[in-house]
Structure formats: structure tokens, C-alpha cells
Length: 610
Ligand code: M6R
Image 1: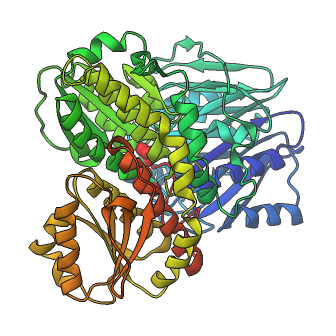
Image 2 (image 1 turned 180 degrees about the vertical axis):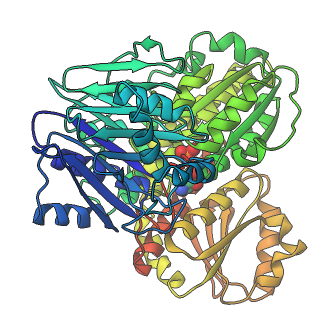
Image 3 (image 1 turned 30 degrees about the vertical axis):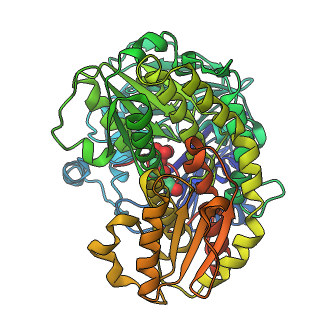
């Protein structure tokens, strides 16, 4: 979703701003723009529809010179993707702003500002901020004060950066609902919606809190909280690696991230498993005693993270002896729900900034949950800061819009949670040791499973001319089927659906014919025979099947069925392992179809608006 970069420096900053935008490309966008204040204190602005490269080419042709600037990648919400709607937006000759989020009261503000004589040139909600700042500046003492007065009139979500060319060595930033970080350099400062954008210029960051407004110059950063009081925000050294944004030897980030899974899992488990036990401290200080009290778990998430939650429900109820509900965040936040006694609220999120998940957490905190825990991949993200407990995944930056390594690392974290909650309830020492051994076997098992890639690439050819696909699984594999369907649809644009295989005869069987490939995940578990009956139901209707099966499940390829064997593994980790062939399948199908694998159309990596 939209990205922001800003700088106040002595050197020309256009190159830094555009490189920052490149590093945010993974978030998804449709247009990009940059504005700087030049040596005559005039605003220079360039915007382009399409990729950051087009903006970079335009700036290369007509170089921008100036030490203060702001830049943006836009993911359209209000108004079509176009150069006119791209940020930065301006008011008059002096004010330029960029904005992430949605201004919900933009229509009423637009009416008021039009009556005051302002002319709107874009269809965006953002343009009201530019004109409001201009208006407030007429009576304010400073740009800071004008921005403070402006944001007090905004409803909705924003991360915004404002500059005034008459005051060329200053930018003012404000955060409410959309993240912003300040990067500290030597006699220069930067701002961005994600620290990744600024790693080439600094590793020292302060994260703004909700309601903060900050005035940033070359030499100073002054931060004010919601009440307008001066505050300090801790400056931290970033742990994110500088090359997190590089593809290395891989053609796509998604493929790189699929292959990073053994290392990501290893790193996440390191120091958290010992002597056949899960160390509850992985979930935060004093987590052990708290997790022991848990009687019910409510999981909230979106997309792929939601699928991880669905798998965890099977695990928590089967192994840890506690009940569990799982709900999509955008539904949870608008539904009246009941809080059970000793209920733990768990949010799952790669980014930690998903707007619906964050809103659901905030709502849940008022509802009487015993505690909130997030399983999240981004340190310092909003979910991490606002939850009572946090389990930090160490998957490394995930750049591909299609989530891969974050999902398997989330599942490993959830298995550890199962052990920590179930200990002393239904999980004894022997069972916990078995679970821990299964987790420890994961990196090697995943390496073995990735060796299926060539066979899966060959199989992908069969999907190139297909418009639909059906994914089937049973038990904790049915969310894995859902995840496989989501991956295929989001990067290859093939319509895919997933069903718990037992549900076939209640409707979807009507879809079966030779043009509807059916993908089945079939580990050797207690539901295998049931699944085999469902497979026969498909076969009897002329369906073509692709079965990812345990070697001991005894499926054999024939005219109607292609079988690829997945390495045998412990039942605890089967959902994690069976995810891999589905990730590879969607990747290779997308490759054949020639889609934009890492930035599929219409999608954003981090969904920071509702
Ligand atoms: O950052 P989060 O895990 O909260 O993101 C949730 C979803 O937006 C995300 O999983 C999305 O569904 C992915 N594109 C799936 O590949």
C-alpha cells in the first residue's frame, strides 16, 4: 500500500527519495511522485503513473536539485490511478504534502475549503490536507502549528508529511493510524512509512506513536504527542539487514522467500527450544504464568495469516485442550462477540500494520480479554507495540506480496504457543518433547520438500490454460488447501477455491469436469481413508487430480491422477510441509502465465487502510 519517504539534508535528496520509493515498491502501488524545494525556494514536482522506474527516468531527464523533499507511491483508494491523483499534492505555490491512509471526512472538508476559495484538481481525499495546511498557515505561527491545527480536523487514518517552500529546511510529519519512522543521520534527517526505505542512509530510527506530530530539520527532531506536549521517542538501531530488499540469485522475491524458509524457521526457533521444551519467554516476559491460565483462545487475522489461525484452531483444540475461535479481522471488528473466561486474544500478522487487525486488537482491548498476544514479523510495528505479549517471528523482510515464509514461520510460532498453553493441561513432558523434536526437524524436512521444485514446475504446464482450480484437504489440511487457493489466485489470476473435502458432495462436485483441475493435499493421517473416498468421488465425475501425498499414503499416478510424493513427516508439522508444494505450484503457474509475481495487480503488501 502507499509508501512515504522524506528528507531534510544539505545534499540533493531526489536520488535518496527515489531509491527509498524503490525499496517500498513491494508494498504495491499504481503511481509515484517526488517534490523538492530548489535553491530559489520554489517547489519542483514530478509525478508519473506506473512504476517508480518511470518516475526515475523522468527525473533523470529533468534533474531535481534540493536538500528538502518528499516522495510517495500511491495505491488508489479515492480517485483512479492517474498522474493528477498521484502525490505529492500541493496547495498554491508553496505547500506540498504526501499522505498514507484515508481521510474519512474529506467530503465535508472539501465543501468548506471550496467555499473558502480553494480549487481542487484531484479526486483524492488527500488534497484536503494540502489546502487545510495552507489555510491554517494564514493564522498560525509556524508550519508545525498549522499541521497540528490541520490534523485536529481530520477523521480517519493518516501518516502525512508536509513541506512549505518558504521555510525550506523543515518538514512536519504527523501520524494517526498509518506508521511513520524518523531516520537519524549526521546533520540530516529522514522520514518514511517503513524503515526499509531508509536503510541505505541510516540505521537509527524512532517510531512515531499514534497522534504524534514532529518537526524535522537538518539538526533537530522535535516530537509532540496527541496533547501537543513535547515527548521523546526512543531511537533504536535497526536490526533489519541492509540487503533485505535484494533478490540475490533469484528471479523473484517470492521464489527467494520460498527458499529462505529453512533458514527463517531455524532463526525463529533458535534459543526458544531447549531440552525438549518450548521456552515460554519467547512470548514475552512473564508469559509462562499467563499462558498457563488460558482456557480459550480468540485468533484474529486477515488473508494468509487468517489461514495460519485456522490451522492453529485444530492444534489448540486437539493438543492443548483449550477452545479456540478464529475470525477475519474485518468481520470481528463489526460484530458483537462474547468474551469467554480466561480468554487470550491472539493477532497474527506478517506486517504488524494491517488496519483491520489493528482495529480489532484495539476493540478487543476494551472487551475484557485476559491478555493480548501478537505473532508478528516486524519489530516495532503497531501490533507489537500495542499488544501485551509478542512473539517475534524472525522470517526476515518479506517483500513478495504473496506471503510465503511468513506463513510457515507463523505456524511454527503457533505450534510453540500450543505447547506453552497445553503444558500442565493436556501436554505432558513426552508429548512436548515430541512436538519440539518435530519442530527441530522442520528445516531439514523443508529442504527435502523444496527438492520437489522441478517436478512441480513441469506439472505447472497443465495449469497454464485453465481458468479455475479446486483445492481439497481435510482436518488441519483444509486451511492449507485454502492457502494454496489464495496463492494461486493472487499471483496467477486463476480463479481457485478450496473446500474441506468432505463438503464436496454438498455442492462443489457439480463443478467437476476435465477443465477443473483438483489439487489434493494428502498426508498419511487418520483422515486418509476418508480423503481417499472423496478422491474417488472426483474420479467418478471425470475430474483431473494432482495429489501431493505422503509416500506411505499409497496413491499412484494414472490417467486421471498425477501423484507427487511429499517427504514423510511427523503429524505436528504436516500442515507446514504441505504448504510448500502449493507455494511452488502457484509460483510456477504465474511464471508461465507471465504475471507480475511479486507485485500482482490490484494488491498491496501491507494493507494499512480499511
Ligand atoms: O501483514 P498481514 O499478515 O497482517 O497481512 C494479511 C494479509 O493482507 C496478507 O496475508 C495477504 O492476504 C497476502 N497477500 C497473502 O499472500
